[in-house]
Image 1 (cartoon, one colour):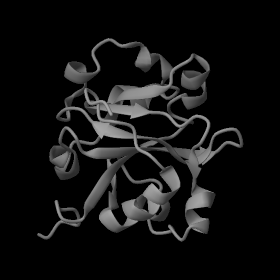
Image 2 (cartoon, one colour; image 1 turned 30 degrees about the vertical axis):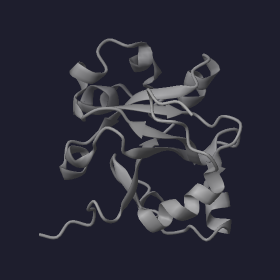
Image 3 (spheres, one colour; image 1 turned 45 degrees about the horizontal axis):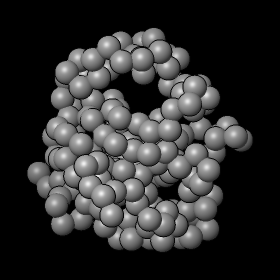
Length: 171
């Protein structure tokens, strides 16, 4: 079987947040400005994720104050694995709005994703720039992780501007 993703065409991973399931507005309201781990489906994609891989944070939904689009850019910081080993007992579980979804989470990935609270790249801005073929745009209900091709990431980079430094690096 040929897989869609390989080292030659992977530009970045993309993880999605549904604000009906996880309280992104509440998370931000509480002063949080970065994501340090996120839930995934355990599959061949999550097994491909490696420390140092670029990753984007996508907010779904249609809230006017938090429009759908890219709300963060950063890096995978370790291997995906059992959620208890990665997340532990952190306060993040308090932001789950859907208890069944929270209970269903068994796998996650450690990340360092500073949020772009003042400058998200909205889905509307992506579409104006000719970016209409992201997997998350074509199949918004797909599971985490999603992905962005190298060609798509080149176009997105023009909208994002400078990426944050990977954790532990300066300048």
